[in-house]
Image 1 (tube, rainbow, N blue to C red):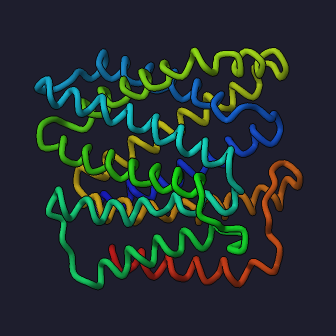
Image 2: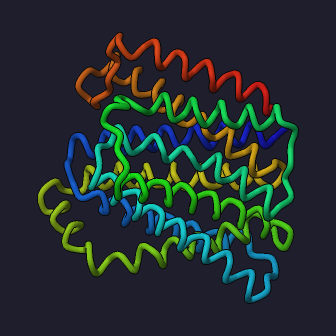
Length: 294
């Protein structure tokens, strides 16, 4: 059951990365595209180090293309995610990013033949539903519109990349596909530089390098999360791996509450008692779902 440990590890590491990003954007307001520069640099360096230190298995040109395409899709879905945040109310947009688990279950069944008992799918629904519930602050603010469609497409594209990665594991090892996909990430970020380079320079000129240094560390954690996620795919079903990673909002909540309690004002986190019951229900659903699928 190593896939369980790596899936939980991915969720925990990404939660730490999310908290750091939240800290930086709270203390040093900047364009949401600026963190992507750090993300691109870290992924490019990681790809180069993998090729030099570990090497790569043989892959056909088509499979190399698919591997690089994974990285490009990762960047594109991040752009959609950022656009959704720019256009919509954060508390009503972010929760639906967790719909990835449902899309992964559907695509895994269609393209990978991953079929499970009805009870397993109940577990997946509980995890995804709990993730959406725990992330939502006010359902009254929800409305259909561009932000919603952007975030749904983004979550669908995440599912696509996971199914593609799982498929490619039949042709090469984890490190090879990881390296080529990180090249794709770097190329995707490179395409954003002409349009958003001014945002990057403005951030450095106004706030210096402190915030960027934290973002680089956060990007390293983000890369580590992807690595754990992809390692989990080597031995686990993509449907179950992604369902378990839906625990990410729970990890974020726990870390955010701890930071808010021990360092008030460091980040903004709503721990109002009125939301405790809803969060407790969400946590209960997620725990039950996790127990069912594992």
